[in-house]
Image (cartoon, rainbow, N blue to C red):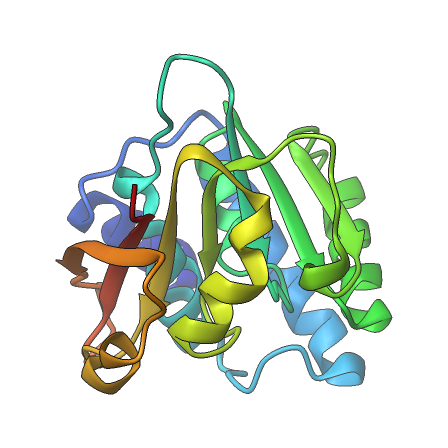
Length: 213
């Protein structure tokens, strides 16, 4: 199957409606990721079709769950973004989101800045920093991560970045029973969404965490 057809079919299977030009941008992002990957080793997945399922569709599966507290601009932080996943697909799929990608490794953020420029993503910010040292002016409605760390470290290092009413969305493979068992007392699991990703024959969970009031 051609990569473009695979993406179109996958987006339809996820029940998503994307803005005009979004699929072309997603494919352009994939091409850029593939090009830079040869030098920078941004992802272990190298085949184009697997990149569509493992990266694009896997990230897009989280789109329906990204909501803010009100009607204002929703601020999203993608922690340990690496090659821009899930943050760049989220920013392309939902231009109304304000997405910040943070990674401590400069060669990765160099790629992210290049992607922002080439794809004209005005709703994307890129930060080179350790997340525990990041002190933005305003907090975030949603803090997400796909491969950053275990849940305890994820919520502990980013607690200062979550705004009141905000939530963490952690993208995981198998349901992380052991990680949930050792979560700190200031946080609770409020939902577990089983993600069915087209073309990905693997268990995927989106764990929603909220501060304990």
